[in-house]
Length: 184
Image (cartoon, rainbow, N blue to C red; front, top):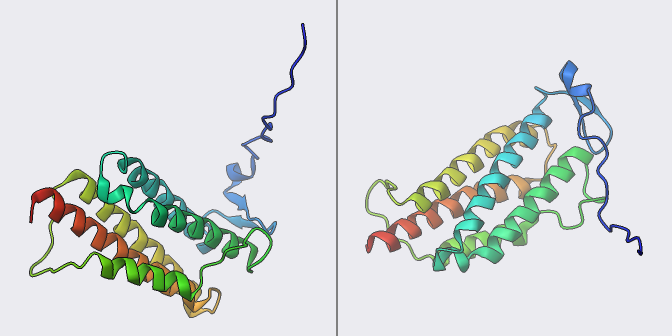
């Protein structure tokens, strides 16, 4: 019998024991306390990535979200790139597609394309719209965490602007879903 070799890679140990003492490592190799602002930012990015995964999964059931999948995948890539940029303290290395002004403009075009008209406070009752709004809330959390980085010139202004616009994108997407599903 012929022996086959697997093309799957084996992961190194997931546990490092450094976390047991309240520390974790960065891509650059720095060891930081888990309550360091950079680790908080990474947690916020992870939280946002997770709910975007959920929104992408909803695309199977929503024509509107199906039409947004390319944008959602792009957002995820840029968030991953942001995490790398912050962890490495620079663009380059693993960060080959950093956020730039054209990404801000892409979000603005997407927001404008929804052609929304709001005349009152928006409540969400449709489950998908509620989760998309939760995505907006997590984006705002990331924005608040990044404010210190902006103030200290540790992130590029286009990054901060992108995250700000991203919360607007998720809000308008949630409103559009709510309006389409409720027939407004």
